[in-house]
Image (cartoon, rainbow, N blue to C red; front, side, top):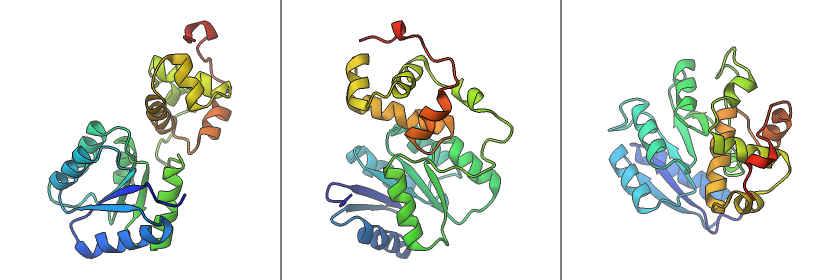
Length: 214
């Protein structure tokens, strides 16, 4: 991934942190473009202007965030943009809630810059990072029960081995829509990759083929 067509939003109220993150990502993603924001309103303005942003690096403690409320608002308004939280907050409850509100990864702000860049790369490759205790006591089937009927259809076709383009054709939707569904499916299932989702889903009662429009 050269970074030639990638664009990032770095939202943090400390200019030095924004510059350090941009520098780290710039070394891993050559030619990537960076937008910066120091408040939630500025971050929202950037995403409204650049809805195709490839990833957001978001600090939870900046003006306008109101704790996790700001994360929830960004997730609701831009559901397909991966959000990587980079925060100094280390409380397990905060981390769990961040994932519940849709974060694709949660990184301690003290982590080495090269580690942050590596996690961002993994997120762009479709991985979802979750802490070991993010969903205590639940099962894969219980998480799968959160899927909508259309997400079940997408998952069923994933298990059949179809790629996004084939799924889009069979369901009569755009490929971007399928990509968005896959992102949400991985998040709801609490898995890191498409492959893991497929493997663990083989034991579930997936929709019969006749319910899938071709």
